[in-house]
Length: 328
Image 1 (cartoon, rainbow, N blue to C red):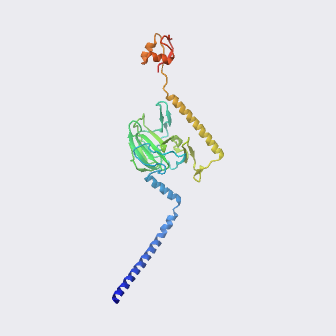
Image 2 (image 1 turned 180 degrees about the horizontal axis):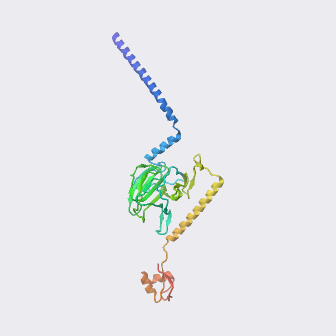
Image 3 (image 1 turned 60 degrees about the vertical axis):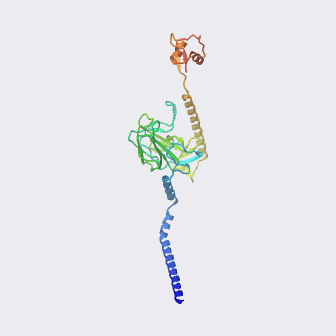
């Protein structure tokens, strides 16, 4: 009986020693971690934000704005545009060293269609680079459009498109840094000479690249671009941003309002002009000596009745040499 009690006491004593030893080791471990903890506290909030932004590039850039990520569609977002959004342009890199813009953003009367980007002169084989840090979303070939093109989504909310390249140098879902080569200049797709077609978009909304980049100066126009869904955006410098908000004096606000009104008026006039230019023009025929309504109608493939109706005349009207008739 005494032997059993002695063994029991011995076991309890052994367990107590093990527990004390484990506690001492735990305290030693905590003490060794103290310097690491102090180093972690020494990292400022800016560094943490930068680390989070870098991590975001590897996952889904601008995830707070874009609900999804896909490698198939150029535009497939299905979200409403915010009233205002400040786009950070710092950390940019020009997509090409070329300073020559060959075609601007806007309506093209010659082709009777809208041009949603800026064309920059490059030669086949010239290096094309990412404009900002980001992640490659689309790498495709479109024979009747962009040719070989790349779309990159950036943490600042922009998506940039690079078209008519001769070769892709990146793959879909690949993270890239600003200035990293993504392709080579070319003349693929619907193109009439080697050039880079460059687009800037925000949630699928086209932004004139020349409102953001100064290609001649190889620079951006400011530190930030204030996107406004109601009208023209605004370029801001870093000193215009106070506490994360745009600060303006009453005079600056009035000047900005007048500028936006003027730009909206100009945009309206350009749209009206484009509509007029897009309308089919009346085709005319100048009457020559000896011609009749019948010969003119047959020449242009219309009926005599249509010819009379378009010119408010009858079949008995006598034609004069030099008279102008509309036939279409």
